[in-house]
Amino acid sequence: MYDVIVIGARCAGSPTAMLFARQGYRVLLLEKARFPQDTLSSHYLHMQGVSLLNRWGLLDKIRNAGCKPITKQVYEGPGVRIEGFSLPMDGLTETYAPRRYVLDPLLAEGAVEAGVDFQQGCAVNDLLWEDDRVVGVRYTTPGGGEATERARLVVGADGMRSLVARKAGAEYTIEHARQTCTYYSYWSGVPSDFELYERPGRWIGVLPTNNDLTLLMAYFPQADFGAVRKAVEPAYLDAFRTTAPELWERMQEGERVEQLYGTGHQDNYFRKAYGPGWALVGDAVNHKDSITARGITEAFVQAQNLTEYIGQDLHDDDKLKSALRRYENELGNEALHHYQGALNVAELKPEGRVDMLKKLVGHQEHIDRYFSTLSGACSIDDFYNDELLTLLDQS
Figure (cartoon, helix red, strand yellow):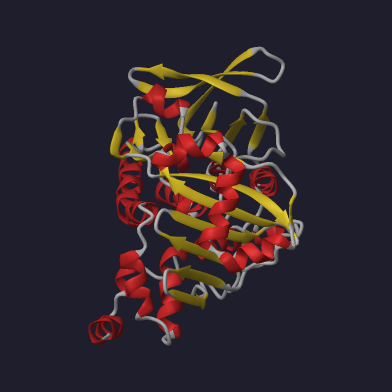
């Protein structure tokens, strides 16, 4: 019998399994894919996520995998352009945007090094129940046979369409309509920083990633999804031409080296985070529009919080329930703030944001603090300090 079974080995599951194993628990990590395998992603590790990787001893793996460090951020909207970067965290001054076929195996490797039993090519089919409590899982092995394993806690890190959430009956506690659709690809010969461009109805994201390639993402209103997916390439290229003309010129010197990827299924929700014998992390518990690229970082934060709150109390019923309640309450604090922020940006209405950012021009400290609110290095309450409020009132 295992102490913990984690379903899903990507950016939520592998860190959760690793951290439980480092606490001395016997952990089984099941993944239906076989790594390395890519997946839809905006790739970015905000400063908060980079700080956690460093804390876990995994940051050098990312650095050594050929991912370009990012030290500058640009935002350009109607009538305003600002440049700066997040405040440091734990002495760190760089962020990264690794490809998922690079990041996910490195996270799984960290779990294995911690003593996790990692099994790939395993499709979980059902949860095992006893006396209204989850006590394990039933899954298909790589050879096609059926196996069962039992554990004190089953953690669903199995994404937006989480089987664990469905089988456990984890209801939605917050839910909003889809707001955008996105298409992206990878380009060579387009040097970049972390760049964001916005106009009404459009959002462009630009990130340097592995192998000297640049991720170029275009966002459209959800209402346009039907039309965009019927003519993806012209819609994608036109978004860059009309939203970011200077970037468009750079793209003429480069070359798209992969197909276009995309989705219109960017659900926005929180689910019930735990129940008897089970818990959810990552997209399984909270998913939102990818426009602010917070998904990977928040998966890391949730893995850290869940394992830290439980600590050595996994086998104490009362203490475990209290720890899971604390974990869920924390989701209602920081994660809810970033959720609301993503929905605001995903409206693709830059007017209010642009008006505020225009007042920051010439005040680099406030610009860097603004970029820090998304990175996790500065809370929104700390950003709106007395000095900033005075500046906004005077402008």
